[in-house]
Image (tube, rainbow over all chains, first blue to last red; front, top):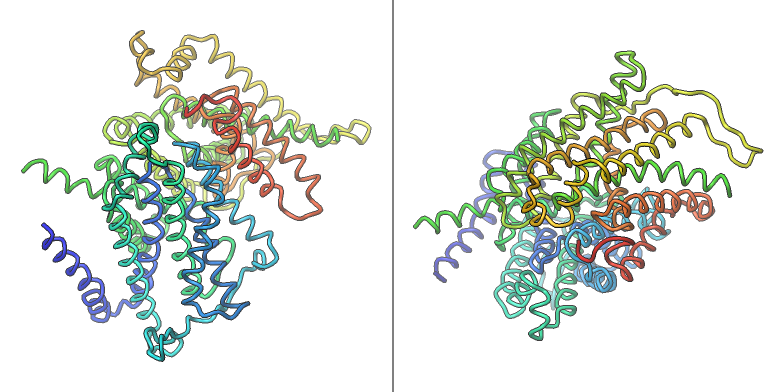
Length: 323
Length: 289
């Protein structure tokens, strides 16, 4: 079983790092790089949302942390002159810190109450970005410099994006790498003691508290990790788009993050990745349908929900059951 | 000061009506209806079509949007929500469905009615002017009074009719209601239709004053969520209280805080966070409703 998993992982790596670029250069659809980069980054954010689902909370506030992360990184790059690669973890840590502060009161809420508060949180983030002087209001911050080179002891690990002949390809590799690392971390968390404890929260919070699980600390930790993912995804996004506005991440984006998790399947670590890919890539492909794009997209989404209410990956379950 | 209170009451009456529909659906089916704002916009467009394009009187338009939305709500419940609720492992799966319906309605509105802002001409002209202390156009007063009448009618319906009693029983305890012979699937459908109808009615009322456009659905849903969080989800008195409180806060905030820029909603959100930290279930909600 373990070798099977390793083989699957290797096949996935080969697919995303070798086959996809080959396919794109063969067909000449260079815009797919941009789409797939977005898919990879959004799935990083969705991974965070999935982790909050894992402790039994519905998180519709990931857009808020993506926005905060984007602004933190942008402001550090443009006003302090820090290297982008340093701001990336800083943006994530800042989001984790903020989410711990906010999470302390609101994580006491459950079910729909928590979902609604987090939804409102996205709106709060947008309004804050509009009101604060440092974020430059509705005009946003534009022409952010591309990430520079990252070198340790004189050894260049990542070349400066400005010097690349094809920065799109560079961004694609970078985003996919980030996605792979995120999901490895997520997989590790789920299959650790922490993951088991989180699962106990999902099933029955009172019961797990009664046998001595520190539930308040655990849900704060899970929420902070979740927001960390949201923050780095937002920071990367701002740097790729080279601009950030208060409307870069709105309520619809937060809802989308949640939908990616649902569609992929809440019971599977790689569910959010698949869900993001299907929904975002599908949306992009449907742009040929012009004004019917949204109609077809939402129609398919409703149908999928009717046929597979437990997510696309629940198909795997049925196979195993029939054997 | 009187002006602020009058504005707050007027806003609150409409907000309460929106929140009532949302809370009704939530209490019966445990479904957070993301599409509520879109239903409201749809109702506005139906009234617009009947009144402006067909040239019929306003009351016909209002009636039409109520009927259209009620049928739509019943269909959505019967063919979409009921099967998914029956088959999914987790309650939350209905949220994906609700969001899908919201997108779908957005698409339908875009195709049928376009993306332009639409409004209906004033139904009553003139402005009420009390000593320059309260200045309020007559049409706003009419809409406010209509909204309050609708709220009263809704409460009476829920309290005294057989259907209303059945729905209240369902909201209290589904299992017990079922054992007493309440037809759960039938009353869930009626409840959803009623909730959607309320959204359509508010849309029809407000199209005469503010008009409607495609982009209004999402923000309206967020506001409706705010109201039922203040009052407590799934409780009718809570929805009404939440609606009036939000209306009042908005009215006061826009006057008092206008000197500091557009931060009214920021202040409302922040105070809501503090309030929920103290009282997570809202003013009148049952814990973990």
